[in-house]
Length: 468
Image (cartoon, rainbow, N blue to C red; front, side, top):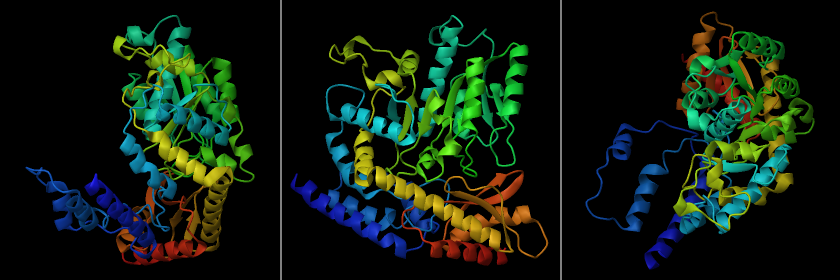
């Protein structure tokens, strides 16, 4: 334990020094060939190594090559900087090292609390037991769609877990072309089949076309297929668009569909001033997937599945062998009964610490600041003659493209710009396809990003484009 104490103090100093130095370093730089070879080509040591040597290797070979998401000018994908409170308690969760499948210890009890907090922040109805933490929204989506599949089968008089899907009318899931890939992966994994994921068109603001949804459901019913779930987005990754959730909920109610909302990134946007109308109908969903490790900055990985009817998830997953029977578990049972994981890490501690350190007011400030930055960038883009705004700003993502005066292949140029900007090391953004065109997208999650950082971003795009 003496070695652990000394190494722990050294590790804490490394963490503090690293985080303090991030804003003054490059946002990202490619890993040099020699370092890549060291990182990926090591042989397993024949004998154990001292803790001090391990820390020295981390300092020399790991910390100098970050993803970049801790920097205030990292605008790529949807990756936040780590909240300091979450960083602080991660070693304590590791020191306890519990399985949070269930039982009477701190982990499951704390998880119930933070799940309730997340439901309260997003305005989602939260019955006792109505949610659990997951590795991320991809796993949360699997939980929610499995619950939807089981409920639909039972409504039709059979058991999907017992009988499988063979010989039954195809179960159909509806998503938009802007829907996250995790919805498609979940459908494939759950045996629904990619062909039974129906892509609903979007409107000019990249929101689900509800009239088209209604027509597609009617078409599938006529064809003998079994519509069972529609998934709306509360903040897409491409543009931050929020689907017309209330109107989607109406269609779901009319046809007995499970209404799932992918709020992995954007559900917390409801807290921004004036944003609530965009999210009307969120409280009518049967399930909501969200990622505390996105907007909140909880260290990766922590997702959350929220369920209006927790019994649906329990029906989809509960399997308690004799050696795990807990007579003192109460009516809710173990958390492991509501999802596929049996051994579950102590995700609740870093989530609790992050939310506690921010408080509701701090979460609101973070959401309002970052959504404000997205609107500011949109205004700068619209004022600039060499940029074009591609979508309304609803959350903290700005989708746009560079349109310099020179003629040429604008799609090719905008496709090449992100890596050229990244390689320069002064800013980081990513690209996408939006409305059939190559686009640039900047996502704002860092609490320390400033308007000056936005100016640097646009300048970096211009400089990078000139070199292409």
